[in-house]
Image 1 (cartoon, rainbow, N blue to C red):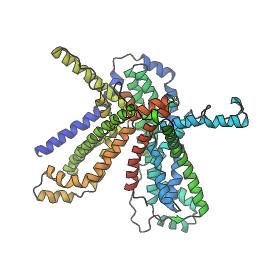
Image 2 (cartoon, rainbow, N blue to C red; image 1 turned 45 degrees about the vertical axis):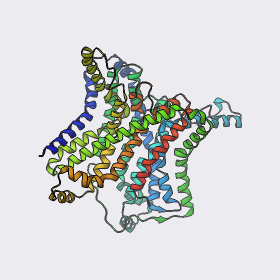
Image 3 (tube, rainbow, N blue to C red; image 1 turned 135 degrees about the vertical axis):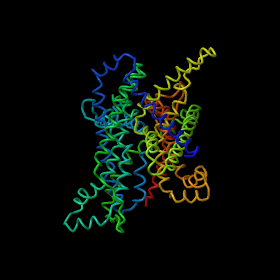
Length: 544
């Protein structure tokens, strides 16, 4: 192996192992910390199982609501042809741009006891507090509904694509056996889309399990809020690490269940000329489709954006202030740095895989897998995992510098933006890895062989062949990572330096103080920026 190849392998190994070290440190802190276990034992004996029950309830109800919002529209847009279908199938993805905690605050303002709806009902019917029943938005059901409205597009996108790739020949065979449309859907179409449903549900489950903003805003005690409180309220890193490991166990269980569910299934690409054709539907059916999907869009996107626009106009002078632009520039700078690092790591790891033949690819593939683990880890867990080794590095750095220069460096690792950028890179490197890996799969190995016959080395092949062909994927990966960094809340709350805000923490601070109208412009900025990856995603799927 050439020296350049050895250097690439060594650097790739260091990066992948370095990104995995915080997870090892988390388990070490949980199992071997010298800190007293009294705080954890108190939580274990009193409220821990309430946290577990609430977390599982939120995940379960979110999955139910998300499937309700996603599966039927996915089938309608894939199977039927009606007026406005091309627009509707794109509109159904838009709620993904709105963080759930923003919608949660808006609906709390609307549906709370002092909100306009209940106040209007009491005034209209002359009711008192005990005279009527009204849905309590500050509940597990309410939190699950907010999360489902923000996360159902994961299931919708995967199911719509799966339905669209199925063949019309299946319908013909089923109708020869006297099956009606309902039987065809539930016995053929839906089971064939089960792998896509399993992946979509696992994504929704992991995101809802990792949510902090919505459940904290609604004062619902879950495992994520327990981690946050253990560190910032009780000051116990060991307790936070132990609960983080418990939450990681749930994540691993979810991923394992999803893979176990698909263990005996094989996927074959259908090359039939009769792919799923769209059936024209009546005006009445089209009206019903638009009514249902429009209601989901109204609740998931239109209502929150309308009130944010209204707040921004009414409180323009409060919203447009120096702090907004300062926090916005801080956010965009850190997100850009993290995006560049993620793309560089993805290029290095995937190029390392490309250099090896099929027999020698096992270790480079493991390197890529190690570097992609962070995406499945909740932000609060990742923040604690990063704080542990960085805190130890701060101690060592100060112990080294104090006798040499009689000075203390302070928290140069855990107390600066370095920790936040590291969290972003660990959390979202998987997005860049997936995008670059997929693009590499479309580059024929014959191009590499042809370049080598012209005496081009590995670096020459990368610069002259791979890089130009990968440029669209590089841009897409960078944008997707950038947007996810802008939206990230739990890790930013725990790792941000003193007197430092990102847009997400800036908005959440006002929302938690019930003053979102003062941060409404920042919330709109997050939403507008978040629409970019949705446009990229819909374009990549060639929505027709």
